[in-house]
Image (cartoon, rainbow, N blue to C red; front, top):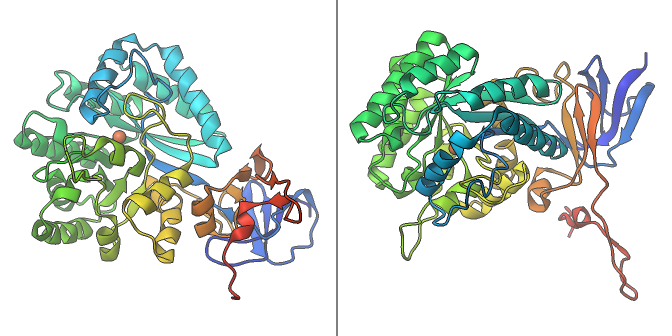
Length: 431
Ligand code: FE2
């Protein structure tokens, strides 16, 4: 029998080397050394890393690639970003949202990013972005899994029509219940919004992912309510808190009570390092807070933590390139967490951890999983994070959907190596 594809001599994220991966019917049929069978296409990984595709569990696809529309964010704050998005919203057209989202998905595929959870703003009575992204979700399905979160950007209670619009968006087929309790008018409204949103998710059997405590205010404690509601409603394992930046500034004693509550509730945390180290601390003089949530402490307790990109060239962030290794690399620096174990974990935080938060089926490199994977110009996950490694091949359901040449520089120095591949500089076991 001829396989559709065999990737020869791959290294895998779990440390196995010299593995061949055979694909049949769009699924992984075998992972073992020395598969001798025929295949319609053979890729020589040459010892490089083959990993499951990158997953971005926190993104805003309705706003992506809108940088400069209708103007730039001058202060760099979250609040000016929200105001700026409010200026842009009435100007959006169905076609433009679709065009920008599809362009972004092309970029994502080229980076081996094949699953995205995107929040979509429902505080526009037209639900224009909701309808546009539902259409995009269908169009990209052959090559990218897009999961949508109903997100009341202007506040579930603060926006006059968000309560109704959120239900309308879910009725249209949006997948996940979102919220933004720290942006409600009062702490009490924020807590009430968390309760109401969790009840909607419980009634509809949906997942929950709230923007939660994206603030430098240490008294922004909506994650506590989110964890308690998760327990009360039996939503364990179905809830994520995104951002959680106020935790950076919280009292240590309070956090020592909060984290076990999150663990008990099975609430996952999603940190967005690119965005939060630029948005947070803007009211500080010096020292200036980084504003990232407490990743090492949550990991130590066994709370699932994933990393999201959040923004790419939009009212909140003028950079970004759909590169989840850039996100992982930034987290390593900004937390900081520089042990080999932590760097290796940062790779999991943009692959397997978010895949489980999204509930992706058939994800991974085991036999029987979807034949979706990425060949990277790196020997292992740590090197992939260090180099923000080139995606040499991106495979979806056994078909190569993106390819790029290796990044190798030719240098012209007398008596020195003529070709430099940064991936060759990985530390060797021998001294
Ligand atoms: Fe966000």
